[in-house]
Structures are given as C-alpha cells and as structure tokens.
Length: 139
Image (cartoon, rainbow, N blue to C red; front, side, top):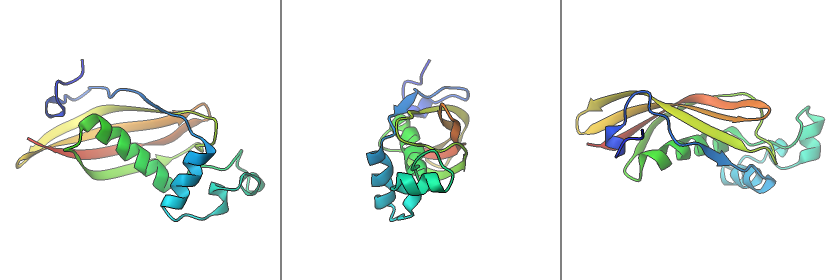
C-alpha cells in the first residue's frame, strides 16, 4: 500500500510505474535543452554508422527523467539531493521506457525526511538506466 503522504514512505514501498513513450522529438528536445549537439542524438543515419540501432537519448535527458520520476512521486516540496545512474541499453524512438522504483531507506536529518529510492528505466532492449535517487521532503 502506498504511503498516505511522502512523509510516511516506508522501506520496500514501490513507486507507481511510469511509461515514457520515447519519440524522436523527446530525444532531440532533450539534447537541444542540454546543449548536447552530438549527432547520435539527432541524426539516425549517423547513429547507425556508429553501431547504434537508431539515434538515442543522452545521459542528461535520462537523468532528468529519472529525477522527474521520483519527484513526481515525492511531490512538489521534494528536493533532489543526488542522482546516481548507470547506463545500459539505449533509449531509442518507438521503444517505451518503463520506470520502476522502490524505497530503499528513510532517515531524518533536522527538519527533513531523507528518502533513498532505487530506480530502473528499461525497454525491450534491456535496462537503460539503473541507480539511486535521494530526495528530501520537509517534515
């Protein structure tokens, strides 16, 4: 059962699943927003010539979606303390990225709850990103 509020989050609690439909627009917009003009993030022919099945999402966009996934669950008062991810399979157009997560630990520091969440973003090629996000929320 989900916590009534994020302040009641319990170790082992699973976050709701989030499916991100990855499109060329999502990939290119993320690359432009993060000023990453490497052609593998906007030119499918170039990406294929480098051995990729298609253009693919950059790490800054991945980190943004990982953080968003946790803060959407944690709420508007949450603050991201750390995002640590390991990249794996590429996030390419027309392959939905499924985000899942689980509360790994909770603690109190002063007037904040500190919540560590393990996160996985995967598509049918495998794990795109795995790691941990630590957020704080006011008590």
